Length: 379
Image (cartoon, rainbow, N blue to C red):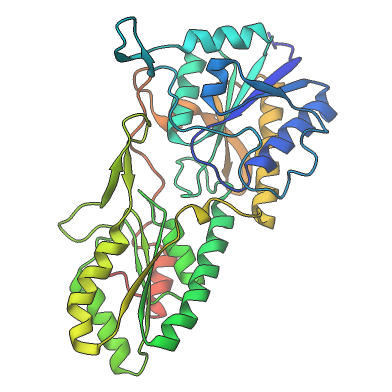
């Protein structure tokens, strides 16, 4: 029997990216204009759901947010309500399942369905809320573009624009000073950002997690370019890239986050290694730029505004059809959905999925095309 929908809620979890407000706008406009539903948004991701911090979302609220990066609902990547850090009666910090409090808040507000927008950790909790009887619809979000089952995620193309523009800017300095310029970009498990951004930004070397690199082969590329008169080299490296027989470079450990390992610093490591090999031979300086959170922000580009609209409106259609426990995807360039468990796995409640990312095929068309035009991958 199809459930009648009158009121829905949504939240954004994990890290921010461009396109989130486009999704929120599409959900609110579709829910109100097409179905006459009421909409509220919990603020700060799962933290807001737990603390019952929310705002009414109507046509006035979402006016003017289409182009903005980030999310008007704000977000957090440290609030797993199935393993939430609290202080017990002895003043000791312990982890507790507080999901029933969140569920009580949903019932108090007469929420018929909850749209959860986020990445792996956020969607894992979405799976767990669905198992406890909540009508959940998931929407995938990551600039890394590595969510399994879907062909592309919003925010990715805007991040690519930032990478391309940064590489364009670095070219002028690299050429003017005969330098080796390294740009470190995001991409912990998948190298899509470095690969597509590097190709678009005319990088000479692209280093990604899927193709371990040999520092000597990277250096040889610099030497080869120098010897033929190109006395500068541009390198684009993913934060998750690793050397042959080596491992990723860890910047920090955040125990309160579902993704506790914080990568970063591989660009600095690469710069120091190259300086020892290259500078004594060519005299070239090695300079590093870490793009960091610039990739997540800024004005949302055309593609992500349209993509976010498609994701948001389709999520509302899924609610209207009572298609719960599922995540919106794009397959063969068409909107579709899959069970959330197919994306994050069917592990125990509160357990974050650790595998199955959509990664770059080292022998795929784009890698082969990049090699054809002289880009090297350090292998």
